[in-house]
Amino acid sequence: MPGKAAKVVVSERQLAILDEFRRSKMEPRLVSERAAIIVLAWEGRANQEIAEAVSVGRHAVGVWRRRWRDGWNELTLLECTEPARLREAIRETFRDAPRAGCPGTFTAEQVTQILALACEPPEKSGRPITHWTNAELRDEVVKRKIVPNISVTTVGHYLRTAALRPHRRKMWINTTEKDPATFQKQVAEVCQTYQTAVERHAADGTRTVCIDEMTGLQALERAAPDKPTRVAQVAKQEFEYVRHGTTTLIGNWDVVQAAMFSETIGPTRTESDFVAHIEQTVASDPDVPWVIVLDCLNVHWSASLVEWIAKRCEPNRPLGKKRGIGRVAQSSHSPRISV
Image (tube, rainbow, N blue to C red):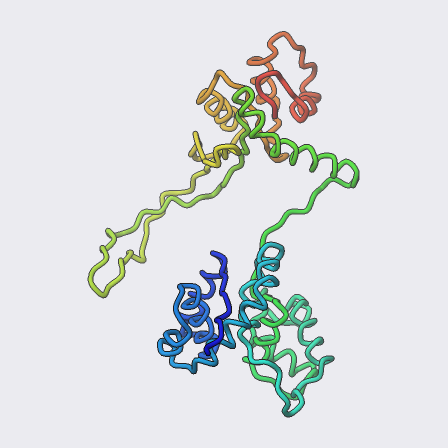
């Protein structure tokens, strides 16, 4: 009597990765086959039907269905906590179980030294590059005599297994606030602003907006029209272009509606430009309160901006000397506009 096939459950993100694996020409053949087995099982196919479609034995289909079922909870937890590691975790799920055989070529200490080198900046090794490639890393490993010889493929395998990607960079910004308590208070205020945005909008229509700029955008015009898509041909775009200078985008992100609106595009981002942008933004819905989230760029708390807010919201409030206006701007909470 045939046994009951293991039930296969797949999340949307997992399904996208599995589908990519089974169609990929770069993944190992066994990974592509096993990804195809899980996708077909998710579609409700029987084991025999899957075996014929993938050209494997029926027993192998059952093995990989069970392997996926047994590892699914761990994959799902990883997807929620560390989504960047999900792709490699799925690859690991499809690897063959450890078998008896010859000991590894490299010791754990050597592998650790290779990974530690990948975490160092290349300039520390005297190399005129900003990012490690597998080939450059392999050359440096041999040069330092960590191992006598190693292939570029093996270096890449160790990096993937450790979820290290030294060829990539991600932007971040460090705070200039030196007092940890003050910094945490500022973070809490910003987070509280975002968390209560929906509630305030429902109560009195308050618009919570995050504003920032992108400067130096190139205004380019292609030297010739694009060629449309044709049978067996993708659309083509002219390589040459004409420069028309640069422009600046000041954008508004509505936190509640999750949409851009009333953006400003112009040649500069001066104090007067930003005041005009705020005026344009508030004019788009003048009868509701506004909460505007900004960074500490000088034009975001200029004298002109504070004067405009004061004139609109508290015309009788004295502002004092210009040197104190910046402090007012950072903490100006009027009944209608908060910055």
